[in-house]
Length: 283
Image (cartoon, rainbow, N blue to C red; front, top):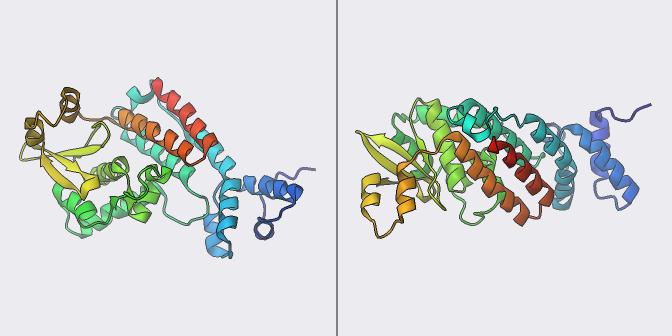
């Protein structure tokens, strides 16, 4: 007789009441059963409100983590050729970002899936009469719908774009990715600029390249003006500023940021998993 069946609703409620039980055997059994819930109880909790303490929330998130790791591995489908094969494959790129978002989710907070959240932002922008890349930057950043996460710059959740949209904050790369992906939904062309230490975006206005610093409230800079300041930029920075970051290189940068952020947060097992998946991008 097997006990591997997914817990029924009544059992989940009983398991949650045992979250802070100090008996090792009970704790192990609770973790074993909750591990079968797929790593996400947010919808169940939304319809079955539970008065969980902060400690219990942390315990529950930890117990759901193994399933989220397994799901990420299963959903991590990289085209043959790795990052190089993602050069124009925005669909696969967004699918991988969704997989990372689901993995980084705490499993207990109800929120929209990444693609739905991006769709809603695009709809709101349209309703707000956004018709250009500049308008979109104002809508997202100057109006502070999204802002730089200056207090927790290295928080791993900055790489969870669904969390970033829900909380209204992220790091430079996270903000730029949201800008790029919403722009694509609106038929606009916004490029990523893989600038060292501070990811940026670019669009063209009347044929002139304009650099957008999403982390600085969408501040605009004429690319030509930045390049003229030779004393402020190294040769390598000037080269990178002219280039466009493709989805593969952007994903590599995100993974390179995420692994140490998870390590710093004490999530060593998750950091190692990200490093392993990062290696699949080598092609």
